[in-house]
Amino acid sequence: MSVWYAFLNALGIRMFEMDFMKNALLAVLLLGPLFGLLSTMIVTGKMSFFSDALGHSGFTGIAIGVLCGAVQPIYFAVGLSVLFALLFSFVRSRTSQSADTIIGVFSSTAVALGIFIVTLGGRSFTKFNRYLIGDILSVSPQEIGLLALVLLAVVLLWGFGANHLVLTAVHPQLASSRGIATKRNETLFTVAIAIVVTLAMSWVGLMVINSLLVLPAAASRNLARNLRQYHLLSVLSALLCGLLGLCAAYWLGCSAGATIALLLAVYFAVSFALRNRAA
Amino acid sequence: MIPHLHPHTGDCEHACCLKIEHLSVHIGGETILDNIDLHMHCGQMVALIGPNGAGKSTLIRAILGQREYEGKITFHEASGKEAKLRIGYVPQSPAFDRGDPVSVMDLFTCCIFKRPAFLRPTKAMREKVLDCLANVHGEALIDKRIGTLSGGELQRVLLALALEPMPNILILDEPLSGVDVEGMSLLMDMLDEIRKKFDLSILMTTHDFTMLEQYCDQVVLLQGKILRRGTPLDVLNSEEFAQAFHMGGGTQA
Image 1 (cartoon, helix red, strand yellow):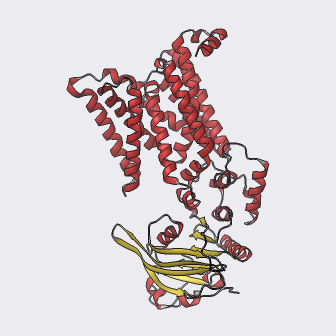
Image 2: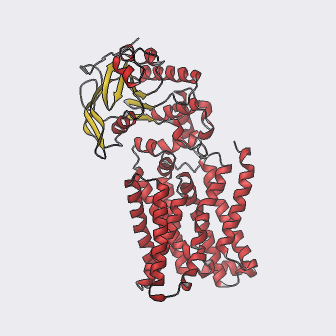
Image 3: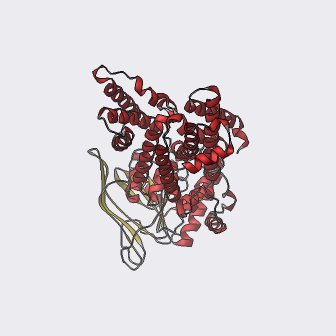
C-alpha cells in the first residue's frame, strides 16, 4: 500500500491527496476488470436477473452477519450468500417452473428476510443504508487486499475455464455432449458472482451493483464480433467508466457507484447507436 | 448404393455397431420411451422419425448420456470388442442466440483448444480449424459471427465441429429445419460423403420425409416405442406410419 501511496503522492494530483481517495482509486482499478470479466459471462449465459437475486441474498447475508455480532460481518456474509447461491442453483435445476419465476421467488424472499432481521426488535434500518447506496470511499486497505485476491481467482478461473464456461453459456447441450461438466461450471460461476457481489456491495451499493454486472458486456455485445473484442471492450469500458465515475463523483459530490453505472449506461446508448456498423 | 443393410436388429458381425438394448426412460412417473431396441452399424445412415412428443429428443439425450435411462447402450468395434463410444453431436441450430459475439473460430477454440478464446489464436490453431472446416467446405466461414450464418452454414459449422475429434457416431437433431431446399440437398450430400469417407454411422431426427429414400439405410418410426423399423419405403408405406401421422392410409411424403 505504501508504494501505491508514494506513487500517487509523486504524481501530485490534488484529488488523490487524501488516503481514502487513494484507496478508492485502487479499488476501482480492481473492480473494473472484475466486473468486466464477470459481466461477459452473465450476459452470454442470460443470468442478469439471476445475478440481481444473488445481490439481494448477499444483503441478507450481511444482515444475518451483523445480527449474529460477527466481528467481520463481510466474511460471514460471503459465506452465507455462497450457501444461498448453491441452494438457489439446486432449486433451479430441480423445478419445472421457469427460471424467471424462481428468481423472483428467491429475490423477494431474500430481501424480505434481510429487512426482517435488520428491523427485528424495533431497530432502525438506517445503518444499513450504506449497503443499498454503497460508498467506495469507505474501502479499507485490508479489503483492497481481499479484492485483489478475488480478482486473481477470477482471472485464474478465466484462464483455465473460460472456454468451457463460454460453451456452457452459449449452448449447454452441445457443451455436455463434448464431455464438459456443465452443472459444475454453472455452480462455480454462480459462487464467483455471489462472492463478488457480496464483497462489492458496501462500496457500490445493492441498488446499482447489477448494472455494473450487466452493462459492460451488454454494451460491448453491440460492437464485438468475436470473444476477444467482447472481453476487451467489456473490461476496458468497466475500467474506464469506473475511473471517470470516481472522478465525476469527486467533483460533483455524488455516489460513485451510481455515477459509474450512469456512465456505463451512456456507453450502452452509444454502442446501441453504432451496433449496425459491426456486422 | 446401400453398404450395410440390416433392416432389423440383426447380427453385428464384421461391422462396428451401436447397440441399444431394452432402453426405457421414465420422467416423473410417466413412460417416455418403452423398451427400445436398436442396432446401428458403421457407415449406416439412420433416420429417426415420429410425431412431436414421440420421444425422439429423449432418445438422443439418453444416448448422449444427458438423461437417466434403464437398459444398455454399448458400442462394439468390428472385431467384436466393446469400446468407448465417441459421439459427435450436432444440436438443433435455432438453440443459438443470434446476438452472441462468438465467431466460428471462437466456437472451435472453446471446444477443442486449451488456450482461452479471449486471447488471439495461434497460427497452428487457425490452421487446424481451417482443416476441420474443409470437411464441410466451410473455410470461408472462420471469422464470421455465428449469429450471422445462414441455417445451412451454421449446420455445416456444427457438423465440422462434431467431426473433431472423429466420432464413431454422428447424431444430428433436426438438421434440416431452418435450411432451404438447396441447402438441404447440399447438407445431405455432405453427410453421405462423410459417412463413406470416415465409415461412421449417422443418426438424425427429421420431419422431412422427402429425402429419406435417397439417403437413408434405415428409418425408425418412434412413438414412445418403436412402431416400425426398416427401409425407407417399407416404413413410409406402412400402416403404422399412416396412423402415427394421421394420414388415414397412403403416403403423402
